[in-house]
Image 1 (tube, rainbow, N blue to C red):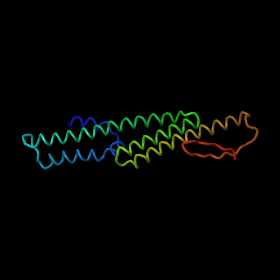
Image 2 (cartoon, rainbow, N blue to C red):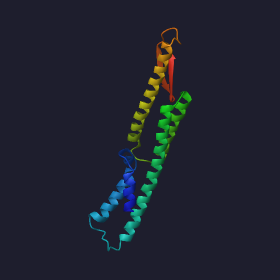
Image 3 (cartoon, helix red, strand yellow):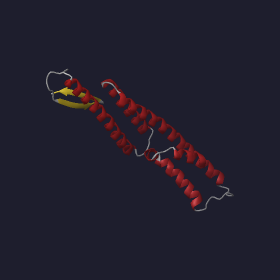
Length: 168
């Protein structure tokens, strides 16, 4: 159980560890309670019960971390797809998928989700700003190549996961 715990915790970055903090704390408390007060010794009768309890806690953590890693891979895929998205439909589809994955994390009861979501919002903001810069650059190139006969003032609207440029 301790080897599995060690392997699992090595897979966690700081943001992921915050999401499974209650499980990590439960294991740490269980270990501290057993060995901190020298309550459990290798020859103790209660060692078997403690090991069973520790195994249950580690298996619970392992399941939560596995599900978390799967959802994080999906989120990474959607952010990568957002960066490559071509058109409003792709942007809306992938921002909706990101939201669904966040909803899955929430429904699964992961802790400290608001802090994790703040980081995802910043990441989404960076991706959308890069897409907006790309759209504006394309528009500028088209206008410089004579595609547009007059100068336009543009209004940028971001609504429902879509970036919309409106001539004013």
